[in-house]
Image (tube, rainbow over all chains, first blue to last red):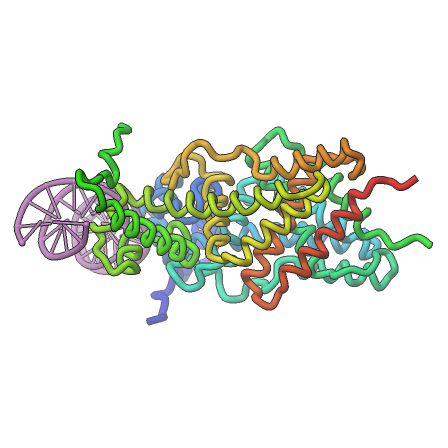
Length: 216
Length: 216
DNA sequence: GTCTATATGACGATAGAC
DNA sequence: GTCTATCGTCATATAGAC
């Protein structure tokens, strides 16, 4: 029942052909990202992807073995880019306390810079983090991070032990901060006039007040 | 293009038959809520609804004119019950400041009491509040509230003018508080061991610290 | 390598028997 | 009022010509 029929393994015997293949894959992946962002996961059919690439339905399936492989590729590309940017920002911070702000700002920065990526991520999280366990799913591979805000919680715990934050439940606080950021970003999608940067500033101000160590 | 073909208007000429009709509609609506919660909006087909109700595909379409009418009915039922409960809690509060906490607790209470309803609401918000404007949508009717956390923002503004909250941007704060609550509830869906009540307490504590008027 | 043509199935919806 | 039977459309995916 498994046995994937060698999906898009047309590796040439001579040397240079892989180039066009790679280019095609990247083009299709980029188009898929846009389409998923525009029409949602379920609304993105092979035919639509093929039409956008100006090739045939079957040509898409030549480069990727299945529709899900295309969606997977789009998801991986987005998550990879996002992860790179955020972890770089966190790594450059001077303390755990500052890393929290850096994390939030990097995430917000990436999302506002790539709204289509953000829509895709929302779509992906919705379809397999909340509910509908085993139905007709895109199935992003079973190795999804178990908790989305784990890194944030780690940073908070570390900042607490360093005396830069008061004592509180780091898990709940990280979920709350992350969810608040999600909501701000979502609002910016539905209302383009809603400024993300001042909102993030406000959010971090609220967080700072809520978690400041008691001065005594 | 409009002209709905009289959806499920089999009103009897004699008196009492409406009873069974109403019962059937309620049964189908309740099943649809469960199915949407379990399999998502897109994954809920007429056939699945019919199977769950132990009737035929076409029988469902007799009582409701279309699949969308069933989904609409499920959505309306959930939103109606939620709105009743939350607005009652808010109305009973003694001040705007206390109404904020009452709002959050009522929302959390409803969601934990009805997890299936919560999943449906998440599904509905996702499919038409964020993105994919005009494609193959369930189309919940065009009269959706433009901003989800408007009531919360109103309460905050009022509490500010009453001197119970310091000055801050009420829109962003209400979006943040609402989003944080959403995330806590979402976490409770994916991890049943995560206690919503203590998390909500923690959230309200964070909010109180972040927004307390400056004591001088 | 990319296409045409097609197989196969699920979907929503309708017509008409009972 | 509920069923069987069916239509039309769109989906993913395959087979084979070029």
